[in-house]
Amino acid sequence: MSFGLLLNALVCFAIVLATSAFAVSLHHNKKNQKIESRPTVNALIIFWSLVGAFFFFSGIRILAAYGNFMEIAKYLYYIGSVPFAFITVPLVYFIVYIILGDTRVSFGVSTVFLIFGGVYLVALFGFGVIGPSTTEWGSTFEINSNIAINVYLSGLFIVPTSMIMGLLLLILLQRVPKRLQNRIAFSLVAISWIFDFMLLDNIAPSGATQMAARIFIFIGVVLGFFVYFTPLLMDRKIEMEDRFGLSQTELPDFEDEDE
Image 1: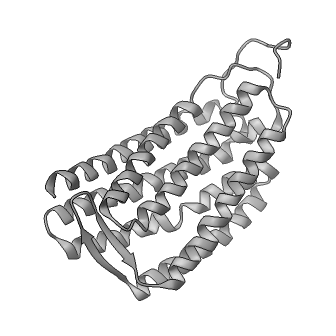
Image 2: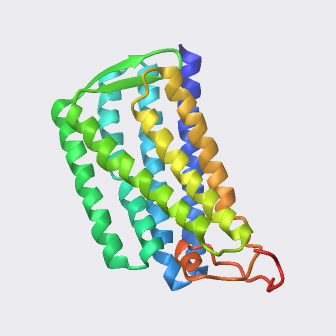
């Protein structure tokens, strides 16, 4: 049991390091962004910071389970649920701003998901959790509230995931240079990949499932980092690209390149 738990905690802290590097890199590159792109960059910084915070407490929780401090592990689960509940807020702001380019509308829509997150936490803390159930590879909890589960699945998972898929479709239908189109699409896929596996991580039925989800999340963060910071090969800019925050490198003009 010990080796698997330690490996699980190690993967958690690896995710923390990767997301921290992502957030810090975004912050340092923000000064090179156009004004139109800075709201999305700020949203991404908050998003990756919340992901890192969730796995920071998850890693410590696994170590507590390893030391057989089960009550501490339960408290750490509750603390880690706070960034988990609000991770959709910057994500929704990010998506709405890319589509509409209006900070007020983006703030208003994301506030709705802030409320959803608050309801989820109230239900979670009110009804509590069952566990932990500690196995060789992980330590899991069972949410003891159908309200919390339904609020998260309907309001905090299905809707944001549908928004990501809708934005992805919109990007693919735009007349955008192929390389740029692929880059934006892969960035969105990486975010969706991480978001989906975080849900699996939080409701994992077994330690092995939890461990597998965290490995895939780490891979998704690393791939997302390299996709986002790959230098642009095109100089043709569009308004949506500026709002996405990818227009940070000045390169020669490629007017004759096929789209």
